[in-house]
Image 1 (cartoon, rainbow over the protein chains, first blue to last red):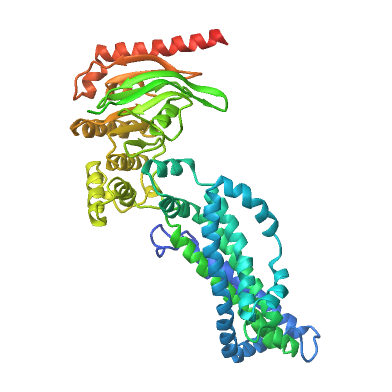
Image 2: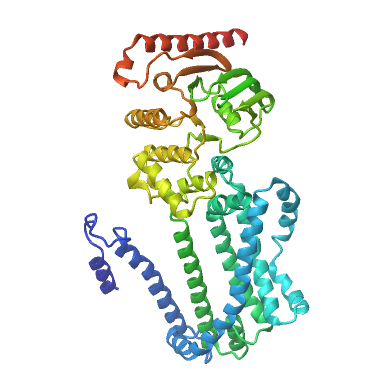
Length: 276
Length: 261
């Protein structure tokens, strides 16, 4: 371990770098912080390796070693890629529809005291229902598995986006409302140029929650009846006790989720550049 | 001929508490009126009523002979806290006003006109920037540019320079007077302020509101020729006399309230 510590010492400058010497967009001290987050991964990988090698887990361990898992992952990449595409044909329509309808209806409701009075009690009851309970019913009612999975993803993502859009529209500051009235904006212009941008911080919060829900519901729905997809991949190899492939599938799904969340965060930062 | 702003027995209450009571004022077109008063005397409320943002509870309020029933492009407002949309660039904030004031003008021409207003107010450097990137003084210039872009013959200004440092404040006062004095016909301006010197320097007339409920306790003409010179004004007897009259009215109002309590 002494080598490792020496490495850390080399990477961290003894005195803070003079202002302006860092690359644009990187705060001073970034090598240290990068190393800190990388070290978590190194430790986790080490623990995983040590556990898989030293624990008496049998011939087909539920915890395959990192090397075996990596090999399984490499071997499964074509299948996982096809599964990703299959999953995305469920995730994207469901999440996109939830975003569109959630924002539009949320902003309309959030700017109308009357609609809030009428609809929010219903939303309070319907919103918290775990969307997973709709899965068997959706599969029974809708003609194809794909449609029912899209529906379930939609329901799961819709409520957080809707509720945050309502909250965002409702929190619109009086001065922007007054301003819009002085300018004589039409109802549509008001929603498009004032309410929507002002509510965007809330909306992105709702979308992040909705996207996380979407992945959960997607994989759960795929356990029920899919013949392809990420959740289906994990379930399939678990059924055959092929644990290296199962663990590879879990890691891969985690990576895809992480990438999707990162992409959403990028979009959020770009859209909210005007926030101080 | 514009008939100006007329308030006949205007009153307003908030949650049952009277905020304004029996306001009778007639402001002819082209007059610059400074509206003074202690905090809570209903200055902002009076401005909101004139803007049509809130409905009068009693009495009649009319602009150019027409009853005020809601906001209109005839009556522009400059808010205390600027109220520029932070998600629009400065030039787009102005353009949206022009788009509403002149719906037939094409986008390219609207942008050109917005730039013209911004240049007039010394904001050339800020054209493509966002309100969050600007200093308070620059934001207030942009807010004034937008009010001018609306082309409203009546401008209602709610302590627009209240948050500025003294240097910026003086600069913007001069800029406002310059823009106002050059235009023909002159706009009618109701300018709310806490600052007696600012009120005298800018206004043709001082309206002083007393508190709880707000009502007019002094209505004074400012007999100073234009264009005004800041330095000469500061030690003029007229300024001293007006200051004393405003102070006396406010003291009298406070004493009466204490007696009543």
